[in-house]
Length: 402
Ligand code: PLP
Image (cartoon, rainbow, N blue to C red; front, side, top):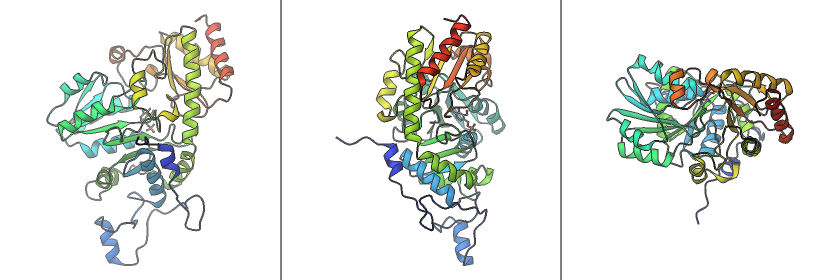
């Protein structure tokens, strides 16, 4: 039997030495690069001098090391690193779409992505159709001759739906000119969307990949052809919009990636512990790792097995008024931080409808089933998760919620 792709081992096999033999590659702290000959410089500007660097907005050796690591993890030919997750998303979409084109997207995505698709793209006369990504027929029906992108998140924010990437890929392959773009921010290593059929995988590296909450960063992973197209000096969105990641940050993120597989396992283990406890006490919950989640079986079928079901979990307290004191007291008790974002070593929690999905109008929140009392947790790396659960349980009791 053919061995399944292992993103952690693929990453570990990569050997990247510094120029003086350092076990970490040297940091190239330069915005521009010298050339020994004019001919070489001209060739580089025409994209004909492999291995030469011309200017750090285009490419930088430190960014290349991190890009190679991301490509190894994703099974893509190449990657390109950006100054934020939003930069990765917008750079990708603006490269793939021209004025008059059309995008089909999951209606549940990160709020910033939703706002870019629903509001900002109007400036470019790019139309967007929002669909329930789990309803494959509605996705098929939404595709038009001018559709250039089918967009989704592997595990959607904040509803934790799982996208059926192989089925979505069949739709884009059949369509011909549409690319399947997948945001895998919630589930690095757990899913390998490119190997499941996506054309381009984007990340907010601000989250699990970096894992330290000390940087905002993003990544675009795909074919050499696509990465070359975004970095083209004449019409590449990465080169011309300038969203490049600073090489000092690339270097620190690269080192943090080496522990990603262990962190993902621990985030998943702790989230599973909490999910089981929430189920046991009868609290309304969302966690794809439990058989009561509608996409549990789909996730089991598509995931890489060694990293668990992820660190994201949500509970429904029904109203924002009930969610607010719950989060404030949890923070006081030391469960974690009442903060947006995810993938940190401390547990983070926020009311999605009032924070990271506040860009989604309330009637659409209702339509997609986003409860006003939905508290999303990014479960941390707590050594003693039993203690953390007890603090949550104490909070629920103090408020007479259980
Ligand atoms: N994609 C997802 C799924 C997110 O949750 C976020 C931010 O929360 C982003 C993209 C945007 O990333 P960044 O904040 O790094 O721009």
